[in-house]
Image (cartoon, rainbow, N blue to C red; front, top):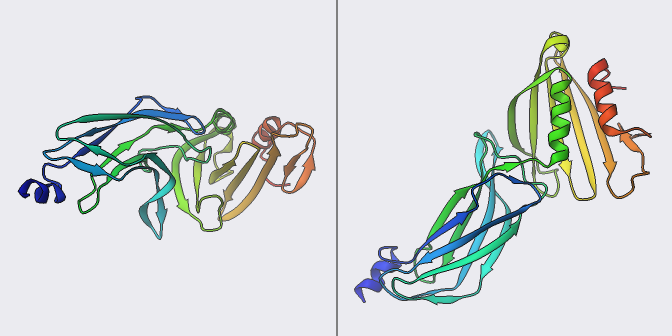
Length: 248
């Protein structure tokens, strides 16, 4: 009875440890690992194992965790005293998962649902890198005379499917120094389409250029500022960056 009372307070109770494959993962890929449950000093009924994919965002000038995805990993079971149970998993990381940075973490939170007890939890950071297309576009911006200096996740309730965006902020170098104060890029990517918004700050004025193109129909034209252009998006971005034609 005493052991059960202590376990309800988390003393001598089951513990959970999520072990992830230790490598960077691309947004859209599978995150693999296993959840290890170590029984405590008494037998306990585990009603559920939950797994949350979390990101940090800024809202009202404060950093807050946001749940990007919730996964149900296991049905209920009983963990015996000092027993070890391992549950392997594969979880698809959504394409819209932001890049993890030192300032804005991406992490998974695993927990055991135990009635009448403090739920054991485990938190693990994951290293998320952008899909290859976004990496290529960012490289084109750098090649166009800019250097990346800041990445931030900002709350915006109008954004779908999640109320935030990740902005990549660049400072001009070389030929662009003195012509542009700052350049910001926001991506919205799905398995069907890409939307890229470029924000240019010049002497306090903000200019926008947005790109949109579909992956489903390669014959569909690029939309630039809502105008149809039968051009390659990468080549058009290079042209804009190399000629300073940020708004047409």
